[in-house]
Image 1 (tube, rainbow, N blue to C red):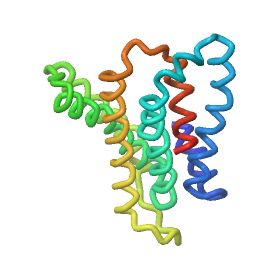
Image 2 (tube, one colour):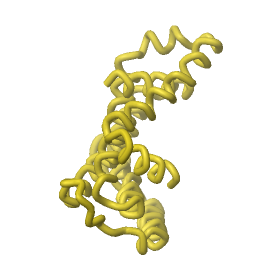
Image 3 (tube, one colour):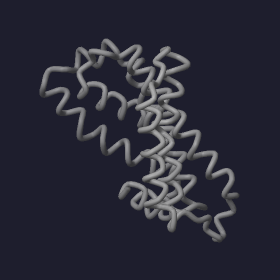
Image 4 (cartoon, rainbow, N blue to C red):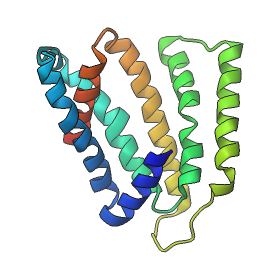
Length: 179
């Protein structure tokens, strides 16, 4: 939740794209030396295209979309919209990977979304500011970010299973920074 607050503050100061770029660049700068020290650079080099693609899809695009959206909607509304990620993830996994959700998973998705909605509902408003961005575009940007998260989860499961998490994390942040 605090990441939305920090995105809101930095987006107003720096703009959506610099905010997203700075966020992933800092992560990449911290993670890359750890990958190097643990001797995992060969693994990163061997799979860089897939990992960098995940970075753009799982960090670069969503962070830019949420930063853009926070110019005209509240952090509460963006948090509620972000709570749709598991639903999109389950739907995409079902369609792409044939991972059909059972009854308890569906119930869990509904309960989880309802819980987030109840916690953030009083803060979920459109801001009547002079950003010039229609709130509808902001909502669509948030939902597009959530779809990107869902696609990247299934892509990772399909193509990067067995990859050391540190390699995926560092490489994806590098990919998002370059993307």
